[in-house]
Length: 145
Image 1 (spheres, rainbow, N blue to C red):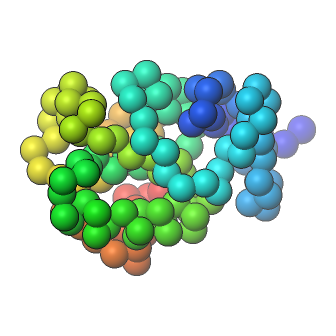
Image 2 (image 1 turned 60 degrees about the horizontal axis):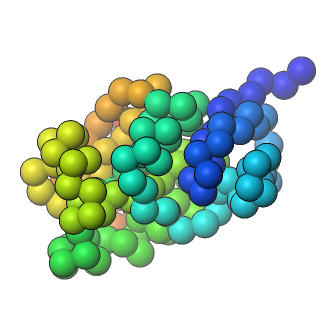
């Protein structure tokens, strides 16, 4: 039997068990049937973020941003491109700190954009400031993701 990992659906927060090695083939949620990967990073609320961070077996990379932030807007395409490139190795999501102020406070977000990497319910690393796709991926890989 092949090794599996838990992946939380960003649409319905259902925990899905998928094979670790599945050749980056798109897989759908067992409950809502939406793709588990491949879409643009979804903006999450408190419940969605907590489900991703605490129940996913893969790293979760969170972009804390706000719609009025110029550097956040400039980095958005790079973050989306990184999501497509990471495929199923990590989940990339966004948190709008204007709408989710409690999350910004909970995670001590002092400047935006701030990108935080979580794994197993713990914060592994964080980085503030806009970055290119290449710089973002290099940083993520340097953390061991």
